[in-house]
Each structure stands twice: as structure tokens, then as C-alpha cells.
Length: 87
Image (cartoon, rainbow, N blue to C red):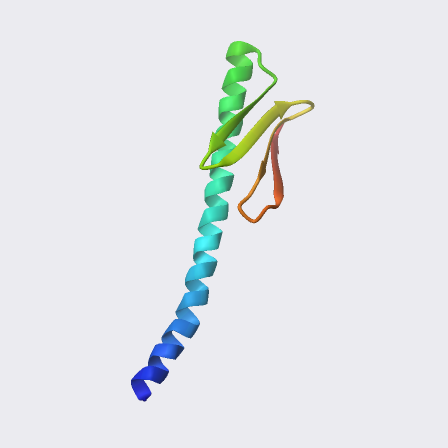
């Protein structure tokens, strides 16, 4: 009985922490790919004079464009629209 209680306590505390950690890492990975896309976009602008493009990584489409700033737009795994820009 005591071991069952300890098992419930262990999974009741560790499982939510692990899920939150996994979620945080996934969001950071998506942001890192978006920043890499900005870098690739800057290289294409300089080399080929392109002003927009897109990159698909793990089913997520990262679209970059140069208007006033170089920006990348993507939808994260939580279906929230994200934009990262540099000047």
C-alpha cells in the first residue's frame, strides 16, 4: 500500500514537470529553426536578391520576407502564429 502511494506521488509530481520541460524544449527548438531561417534568408537576399522564401522543417513552414525588416513567420505546434524580426 505504501509503495503504491509512493508510486502515485512520484508520477503525480514528475510527469507534469517532464511534460512542461518537453513543451519548453519543443518551443525553443522551433524558435531556433526560425532564427536559422532568418540567417538563410539574409544569405539569399545578399546572394540572389530574393526578398522572400520559405523553408519546411518537420512539417512546419517557416516563411521569411523582407519588407521594412527581415521577418520569419511560422505556426508553432500549439497552432499559435509566431513572428521573429531583425532589422
